[in-house]
Image 1 (cartoon, rainbow, N blue to C red):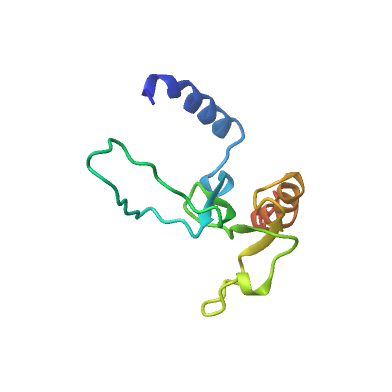
Image 2 (image 1 turned 90 degrees about the vertical axis):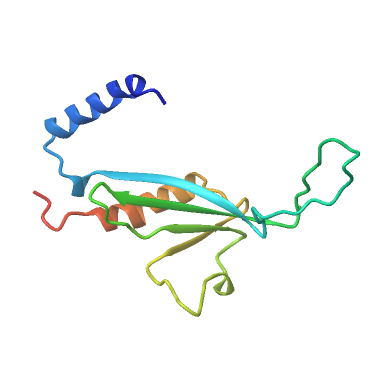
Amino acid sequence: MIPSNIAPWFDRLNNIIRQYNLTSSRIYNMDETGFQEGESSIKKVAGSKAIKGAQQGSSTNTTWISIIEYIRADGINLCPTIIFKGQCPQSNWVPTERPLPQWNYQATLSGWTNSYIALLWLKNYFLNETRPADPS
């Protein structure tokens, strides 16, 4: 990115922060990421030097897991939502050796966020965790 291309966006953001007198404890960033269970970035390729190029294989027996994560501008992490592929979350999908009870677990048929999960996350998790102690 070229700084001159994004500077207007940050100018607008700073104007909104000043206009509404927002502190860093009232500014959030949310992102969704995911990974394939069973995939690894370390791969070995066996082949002949006589053949140029190599094809990289990938396992088709993998499961997609999505994560909705969010953080406050002051650096406070909030509880992520882990989305598994399936009808409903199963207890054996959640770590038992170091349980993370504050994490939220959901399931969709695709393993990705959908409208239902996004609304559930907003209403049940984000709004509850970000409600100010003093609403004034």
